[in-house]
Image (cartoon, rainbow, N blue to C red; front, side):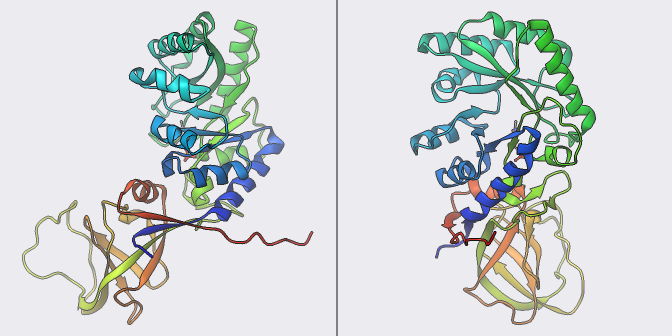
Length: 361
Ligand SMILES: *Cc1c(COP(=O)(O)O)cnc(C)c1O
């Protein structure tokens, strides 16, 4: 098989999604499967849908186009504010987009009218993470605009935390979104259908047993794919953290001095890679690099430690005779390594399916 590659176990992706969907359902929260980390690959999108996601969300129109092209059947949402230059593609492709700008919403209205359709607008509210969103004080003005324009409808309210500055989606933040939703409903005499509280970082809050208020949707990517809570990168109980693994091939395996010799200046990337120890170590090189992965985001198997990486070489320390040239090594990935591997043209993707074993009741 070709290397480097991502080995993707669709059954594990499905299991992760199903487990989260089942845990959130009693709280009245449904799941939008977020597809952006895998460029809208239809196999993965389908695994999320089979795992109970009721819709798919992506931040890039190209990924949504790809899924439509592969006949993935699901409601789809653009979860990043549309580019003004792409409003036509947006209304043609998705039922709903997430918005924060009046000029974009006006353009969506115009385009939807030309297409003879009604486009759903979710307004994103800024609650402190300082990425997208209208300030809470400006929410009512933007809602009024949506309600006044033809061919757009208010599909919901939402917020996104923990992505830009790491602000935690806690009870206070989520209660604020619930309160804002209540006040918009009272002011405009409407029922808001979707209140989308956030991403995988919201799971601790959602599953902690607190009252989840008006929130009835979460948009989950990382937790489904990697089985981890992004707030502390801890494994989520009952989920697989190895649904996706990176496989790379060894191209050099030699005993080498632990420390470099000669006068030392800056390395190709950042400062000097950290090396410690003395004597001789067992070092190996894998044919994968910073173009394909984030070396800090790899978890190596026991007995192998990542020492550093340049564009095309991943240098590891190994146990004696642990690996030889031609051998493959599998790593678990964090989100940063995953996104880079998914977007690298040098990394193949291989899908595996484990037979679903019948479990005795
Ligand atoms: C990426 C993204 C998500 C999904 O985040 P995960 O941490 O992968 O669950 C949800 N909402 C928005 C707006 C996003 O950009």
